[in-house]
Length: 242
Image (cartoon, rainbow, N blue to C red; front, side, top):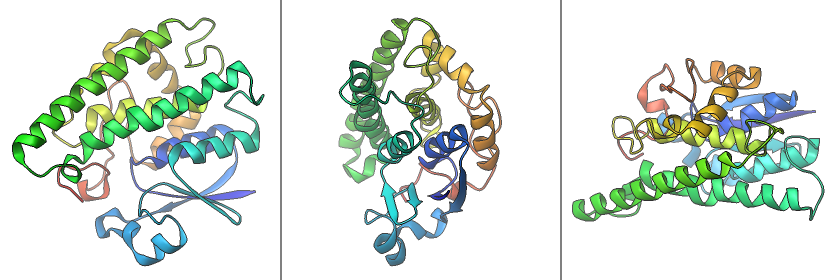
């Protein structure tokens, strides 16, 4: 079994790649040239993702987009990195937080990364970013409070590593890096003790190290993140709108 993962440096594909590495399955990393907007080409939109976004996973005849959907597909297929009993309290709680990371925190971070997709006026833009700053700070406080309740391990679900941890690690990383030179959260995630503990544990995983090496990202990956060692135009969430 082999997958094809389409992505770009430090884009949302790193979440999926960390999951694939942790699962120990074969996959091919297919780089998409963001500098030429390859993801917006007719071929890409017709065959991979009609939105023209990353990542995309090809699993045989199945083509999937949306980060959380891809990660969930992989966990269900390989019966790892997520509670597996449908309808159980553990499964429902897991899904609740997966959708929170995807639909709430990640969605607000995308406003932070690309505010001019929402407003053009300079005054409105500053107000939007100020509101986003407050929301993102609130999300990290909520997540810190949730993690403080865990017993039995450092992970989001306690003792069991899951896709929630990989997703949260990437979101924390991006929140302090992008857009380059204008990130809103400074070092906030790593300043919160429970979040920092989770991020530090993530940095020790071989699956994470392998993923970051492919992305040309130097350690520490989450607690003191730095951009990939490559030209800015190849990296997601630049200062300029794409």
